[in-house]
Amino acid sequence: MEKAKPKSATATKSRAAKKPVRRGRRKRLARSAYSPQEVGEIFRRFSVQRPEPKGELEHVNAYTLLVAVVLSAQATDAGVNRATRGLFAAADTPQKMLDLGEDRVREHIRTIGLYRNKAKNVILLSRALIEEHGGIVPDDRDALVKLPGVGRKTANVVLNMAFGQPTMAVDTHIFRIANRMRMAPGKTVDDVEQNLLRVIPEPYLQHGHHWLILHGRYVCKARKPDCQACVVADLCKSKEKTCDVPAALVPLA
Image 1 (cartoon, rainbow, N blue to C red):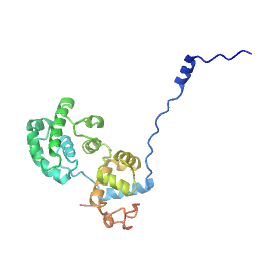
Image 2 (tube, one colour; image 1 turned 90 degrees about the horizontal axis):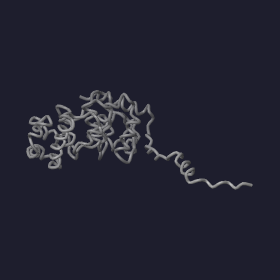
Image 3 (cartoon, rainbow, N blue to C red; image 1 turned 180 degrees about the vertical axis):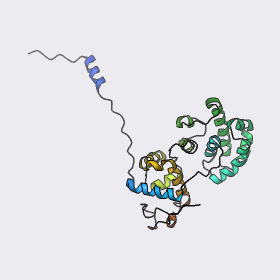
Image 4 (tube, helix red, strand yellow; image 1 turned 45 degrees about the vertical axis):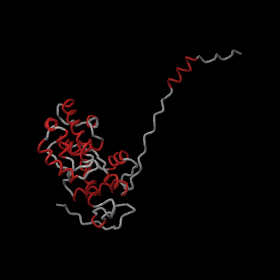
């Protein structure tokens, strides 16, 4: 009986090369506690309560919006607005900001936390906009996050408010209530962002992050949620809620 010939190293290597490559598993997001119908009803009520939600940072164009969002890190919108009224009156374009100079920018925003580093970033991002984008704010996330002082959340705010893209900018308010309400739980802001984009019905995505921010800022507050003022109290599945009766669903002034 003829002995089987040993497999050549070349043949073994060839077969190994044909084996399918194992790809990393896609991260599984935590499940929402709500049905699609319930999420749709929550956002329908938000849309009735605030038909045209808007961000509270004052700006006059995409550039000043970008600067305002960069300055808002670890600062209140009201505090940023007080500082930027004079700044934007003097410089509302990247070139005007460069002409103003870092020292004068610093003087305008000295009431804002981390103002020294923020003034430096405002000048750097203004220069980058001029040198790399012809002085125009790009409508692309990858390009935005390459600018000094600009992270994913800032890019998402600009894309949503300046360019009408249905992005989800997860701040502390949204992260808190997405987990508190168990609508889109996640351990990181990226997890919450992806979960919200998955569960919020498409018709409500454009204004979704504004509704959630305003709800978290004025109703579902950090220390003590005001459940009596909540228009979705009956639908809410938070373990912290103190009321099952929804507030009257009327448009807010």
